[in-house]
Amino acid sequence: MDLAEEPGIFTWDLATDTVYADSALANLFGLDPEQTIAGLPIIKYLDRIHPDDKPSVAKAISDSVVTGDPYRHDYRVFDRSGQIVAVAAFGRCFRDAAGNPSHYAGIVFRTNDQSQQDELSAHCSAAFKIAKSSGLQATADALEVILKELATPIPSGIAPLH
Image (cartoon, rainbow, N blue to C red; front, side):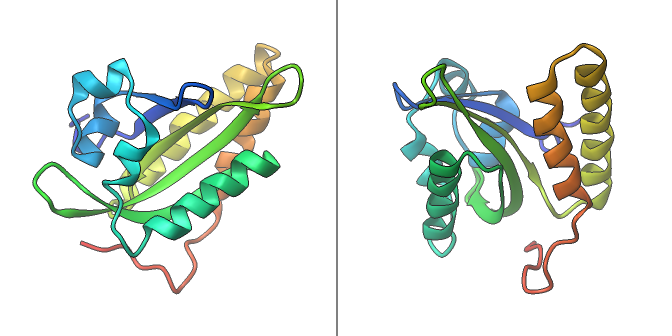
């Protein structure tokens, strides 16, 4: 798979405000891959979001951290060349033994390619089956939510931007 088409995966350590991400996410957000792997503060990612979308993305993430509900949001980011890229993000906040938000993990992918979304659904479905058969119930539950969201059509008011 071409890096430009690959979904990006991230984990955000809330205590240190450090987002660890793969090179695919670096590519989507126009960030340095070595820095994303080593970890960057969340603001570096928020700075790459289109100004019109930034408030709703920040609120959706905050709501997910506070409530523990899964996160799904469609928005636009600027890649390395400054081009606008339409993306969809799925995430979830995980809590420590005391119930405090501790980590947030998710995936971000381009939304202008239906075949990529179909491939993502297939990967998530396979991961769901593995988690379920391995007794990883929390992981299976999170993947089940993502699969339901992937099956939900994008609202008519949201159109992919090219």
